[in-house]
Each structure stands twice: as C-alpha cells, then as structure tokens.
Image (cartoon, rainbow, N blue to C red; front, top):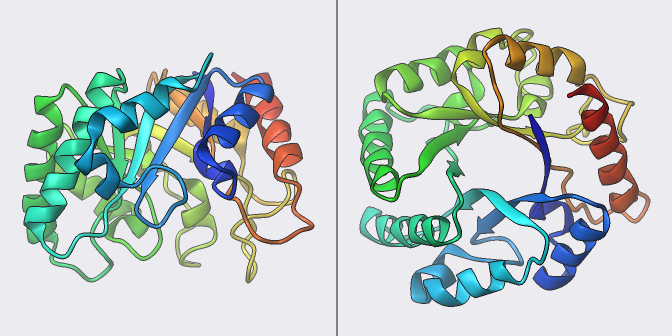
Length: 254
C-alpha cells in the first residue's frame, strides 16, 4: 500500500501552490480532484482543452498523479459524457490508472444507476482506466449492501472506500465489512459520530486505521491510501499539520 495526498487537502490554495505544499510534505503520489465546484481543475475546463490540463499536472515536479476524483455538474447526460470522456483522456495521457466518481443520489432507481455506471465503465475502459464509485452519504452507496450490489451488477466496477461517510452517516451503519472485497481505492481522515464531526483532529475520532488496513490486506489490497483532509474555512484547523500527522500514521501502519 502507498500513501498519497488529495489535492482537496489544499483546495483553497492556487493549484500550483497546493502541489508545492504537498511536495514539501514529502508525498510522492497525489489524488487529483477534478471537481466543477473546486478551485483547481474543473471538468468543463478539461473538456475544452485536455492538453492544457495535462500540462498543469506535469508541473507537479516529483509528484505522480495516481488517481483522479471527478465531480461533473452538467445539464444533461450528453454533456456529462462529453466531460467524462475528456477526464478519461486526461487520465490516460497523465498515466493515471483510476477514476472515482459519485453514485446517484439516495432514492434513485437502482436499475437506472446500473445502466448509467455500465455506460461510464465502458467509456473508462476504452482509456484503460479502472472506475470506482465513492462510499458517500446522500448517494446509493451510503448503504454498504447497495454499494456491493452495484459492484456485482456492474462487473468491473470498484469502490473508493471513505469510512467517514459510514461513521458519520446513518447511525444504523455500524459495520461495512462487506464492501472490502470491492475496494479499489481509499480516502481517509478522522471522523466522530457526533454532530458536526465529519472531520476532526487526527486521533480524536473513531476511524480505526489499523483495522481498515488489516481488512484491506485480507483481500490483497495493494493500492493507495489517500489522505483526504478537507480544506475547511475554520482558522483553528491546521491543515498542513493534520495532513502530515495522518501521513506519518498511515506510513507507520503499512
């Protein structure tokens, strides 16, 4: 397993400054957020000029783009697919093997989501990419059993495990062990079960990093563990310190 850093950790910085900060924290791999709502690369911009986006990634001297998290805000499926294909091309030319996106919102038709993800998986596979959906509150994957069902009904689809959404999500979700055989990527921070505790200081939450890693190892997981501490506006949350702390903790466990 390898420890990487999400560019979302420093989304409030200009992109080049975020990359420089990640490099100064001695990461070697990055998980690049291509989010329409973000402050760095946006899918709509990538779709207009894939080469320019790839050039910006090449500025990450000493950093290897190892995964892309994509969030597209498009008015229809045709435009969604256009932007998605562009992000796939960006991944291919940047030698990124894996994409993560969100599943449909909670309450959506499971059959319709299977059809959508099957279509997107085929598009990703044309560029040699592994497609995953994140385990995320407010989407179909907030229920671990439904997340597994999606992977079973869309052969080749994987999961990006984000334990925080299970810990801080539904109080009924006490175990999510059933998702581990399908995990192809991981996003980590620390999280409590109380109100407004989706992200807390490392060591003050309930994420059992050792157990997560042991469960992953049980299924021969040998991919990334991404530090995904979000760039919150609160002035009393020392981002660089917390990112460094989680990096060292994960490295001590793998």
